[in-house]
Length: 378
Image 1 (cartoon, one colour):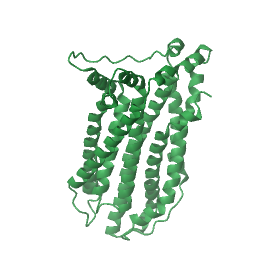
Image 2 (cartoon, one colour):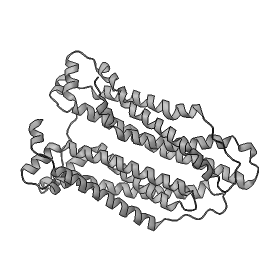
Image 3 (tube, helix red, strand yellow):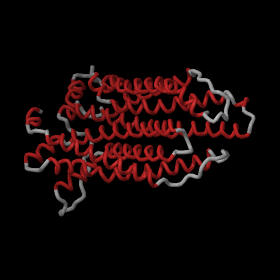
Image 4 (tube, helix red, strand yellow):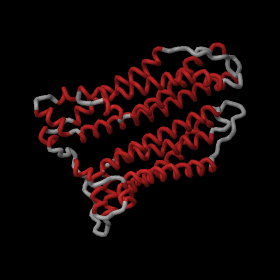
């Protein structure tokens, strides 16, 4: 077996993202389908306005959250496969040298779709457990007839089976492309990618040069860190700003998903950065650099991107809620005007700053524990 269960276990990030995506999409799509069956029973203008608003909300939330998390899962899967190929070059090179074709090796990578299957299945099941509460909360004012929960087999197929099949095929296809490297190069662990040359700057210190080089050559990690903070900022502020626009249950759900996604993706990205620079960090410690200096050189290049993600998340949540109020709920009476929530911004920023700095401190301590013996054992 080329890919072991231990390698699949490391892809917990894909499982979490898949869970969050299907959890949200299942609840709102199922509600939308069940609500659509009651259209003929709705005659009052107020009920009709609420009906249209509820269906529009379900579709907007499903489209935005599902599409965004789908793109994130694709990037995560490609990152894991690329990392696996890079860390198993010798084994893969020996297999190619023994006569195994590129396709015969790549087809074993279908198991990288297993975390998606587990994540979507758990998300689908979890959504059905919480669905009775969602249905009750969505119609708490009694504008609509009672909506009963129905099971929709097509929804299960679309949200669980098709994504799992898609990501299994994507894993095989992407690994096939990643294995287009001569066997000798793989055995020698020669990278097939060209190293991006640093801009010439004679006054740049070694620590500053290493910091910029890391961020420049690890674009996927830049995306992960930016997106993690984007999720945190947008969903945290959105949950605080939804008073009067949605139920407290939805606000708590959005905040929980944002915090889980941010923490998981940030952990994946930061761990990958430290592992990729393990030998460099150890050699820096040998030459007298402190753990704080090593952590700064390796991790600080990503800090500006974290703040970019926070700013983007702030703008995104404001624009989304503004559109929801102006377009989706325009015919609803009693919906308050939405303005930018400065207290929510400050709370989210302080929470982000504390979370980010605590995580950086945690990895600085981890760097302190790295020893020269680890290089000698390689």
